Image (cartoon, rainbow, N blue to C red; front, side, top):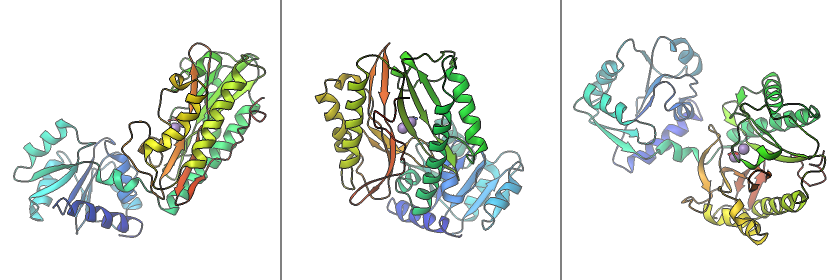
Length: 367
Ligand code: GLY
Ligand code: MN
Ligand code: MN
């Protein structure tokens, strides 16, 4: 296989051999393990089975035969029709495989039952996300794709701001921005875009459904947006003042910005996810709003918009060079408004290198 896939497969072998296993089975049925299959092979369809051993083999059904040949030309391919357990059984038996690793994070109990009933004599050994663990740190090419995704994200956000005028509905802005993204190089949005006006901004994961809230002068406006480019995601939040919002807005905005900047300044390789979270949380607590910051500081971003590591009070992760993480403190006043400022950066030995550049001073977000 070509790089980076050969290297990833080698790393996977290294990881599973420590468990005394020398083959791993990636099963993506209707996309159930799409991110890991994409990471390991570059395949971008919903049905694929990949036997990752010294002699790798890809199995898919006729919907995807041609697509696999195009996207993963160097991998031997077997087309399956009907029940997929039969050809898989033949392959595993032919290779003399008696035990094989499977992903405990994405294999449902039902799927395990199907495997055990359909392929007796092979032990399926659940491993805790071995490919997810490889995906925690990104190579420079992955980081470049995320940088491109962020550039599109920020250009689109600038474009959307110019469309804001009193009376426009949240859903109209979200829809137009999504179309702008797709017209300007994004493959897709990386999650359902959040456009929240006024009191709706106090819900951290607000969705613009029905999104009929119309913009008024004096509203807080929160955009949480991201796109997918080359298979990789971006994630960015900015909060704006459309006119003059509630009197407390500047104080709260400044507290969130201070927390965001403190975390960005302090994050570096070697810090734990708990310590990183604390950098921002302490600032918000000192400002008296600790209770109003109800989520973690951030998360990893990559093929999925939410992946490891976690930056939160309960995280068990440690930051390593090459991890791409968000820094997104927020303060939310239910029924009033919320402020979140989210950046995305790459953890380096000496600090966090930001991929997002969108202005965030109070002056810049007053529109
Ligand atoms: N866009 C979801 C998040 O910021 O985590
Ligand atoms: Mn995020
Ligand atoms: Mn976000």
